[in-house]
Image (cartoon, rainbow, N blue to C red; front, side, top):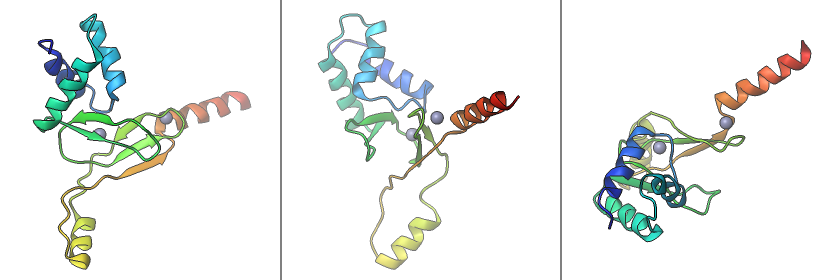
Length: 136
Ligand SMILES: [Zn+2]
Ligand SMILES: [Zn+2]
């Protein structure tokens, strides 16, 4: 494995916490810094980082490929149906709902994956601005 690929993935993911790239997107970004980099190297680096619990993988219902993010408190995601961006929602999932669910089922919940879908504030504002421009 090329030296630095793992570190670069960690850097990119911690500097862009709402990026949530797929392996392909990560590969494209990494080839700028490491020309001639093989996709298999990126794949291996991702695999190692997952095993070391430094990054987390998640898959959305409406997508085929896994996305990656830095390992931090598990949080819900919000995917914009207009621009496709996946935002973090920084609330703790291990609160009220988890406790109620455990109390009712006697299961032990270890993790939760929640994704909301809608129109992000950026896209919404653009639509409103376009409407205002039309009216004036
Ligand atoms: Zn949007
Ligand atoms: Zn996230």
